[in-house]
Image (tube, rainbow over all chains, first blue to last red; front, side, top):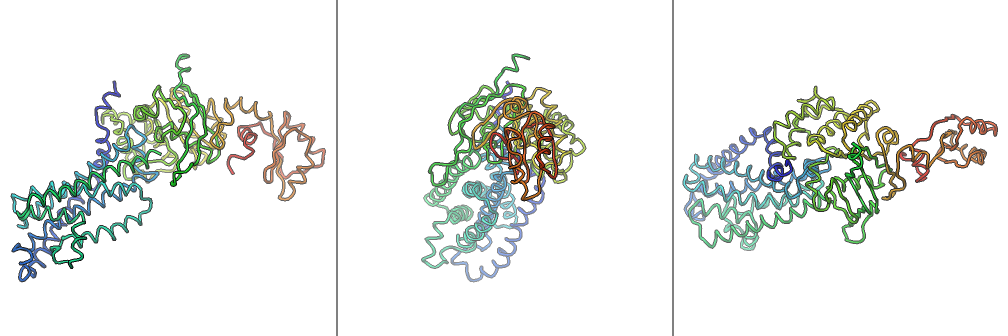
Length: 264
Length: 318
């Protein structure tokens, strides 16, 4: 029976197929961005600013050159930013009365299938980004060639941890201006105060607990300690646990919100 | 054929839809316990003004909206538990079309077909055939943005047919289209019906219902207020002919008083009087004899518009 054959091909993959089909139009540009982004940042901050910092700041970087210190921060922050931008905006668009989710919901796909399919797409995009980013970094000598592959799964965990809450929220948004506000008041401050550019020990004492609480810091610190070879087991467990919890909670809330939005 | 014709494809009993309010208190009842029975191969219309509950009914039948109360069986399945199975065999033409503007006309068909798990080879063949059927072959590789309103709607119909559905649901299929585009669409829908596809459509256009529907229900405030074939409804709820008199503003009330008693039933609309009668000629003569001089006088056969007016006391399209 045809229905049986349909049941076997998992519906979520059809939603993934849709986003990949659309991606055919933009993949070249996105690869240029994925390569240009680390090139520009590592050149400007790693080599330019780094030269200045290395002269007198090496102590708080525990003797690491600035470019090696900043690479994990840049990678994780870029992954977070892409995950947010690819999840929140397109999800909002797709959930509008004329959006793709509405079309998909009238086919055999259930709201959860739609979510899983889109999530697979974000994960693939994050993998592509992370691989290109670390590849460029290896060429720069910003990370050792042996440790670079370890950074990719960490980046994927961060991407999912940000993508699921972003989707859970994005599917409820009806005004594009809310997306901008979220980016400006949540994503950008995270970028600045989560140890991306400097160790959070440099922050005033009262601000440090705030940084510890932010998900980006957990991602950055995990990635950085792995990249610099200073990782400890308890530290890694706490970071991984925090990010996994965020991903899972985000997924549950997203599932509920997708259902409420697409099946009313 | 006769056995087929008696197969019930959609069966709703006491179908109810209540939308919750954010506070969780008693919500808004959009559909209030309706019964429907739609047979294989027929074209069934749901008529009503905006807000009558047509779209909510359609969304429940499309299995994208849970039923609040009552039962709904479609193609032998329960809509509450087998939504995906049912949706696999439906074609949906929503009021807000969900065509992807970033893809070409053909790509829209292909990618939508993939949602049904159909192989690319089948989809390529079907999309060519469906674009021909909806007269869009020349536009196959164009951006969707270049399509007119009527073409867009035809593309939505082509897309709804990609899984060779047994039932096609059309929510106000010709709203917003110009007369020529409407006629082409009706002609295509009629062809579909000839091919044995069951059509369920909502509309607030009476002529559309008369053109396309074998049977229909009239909905008002979430309830079904009448059901039958167009001819049955007309003979049951209205007279054979109607005399429509148009007056200058301000004169209507005086003239309405003058016309009283000529016929049993008179509907008063702004600037217009409708006199329901079995003989338009005689009634018009009687009107003239009383010295009533309307701006225009028109004798016509009764239509579903009059049925609607009788049933709800309101005109369908204001």
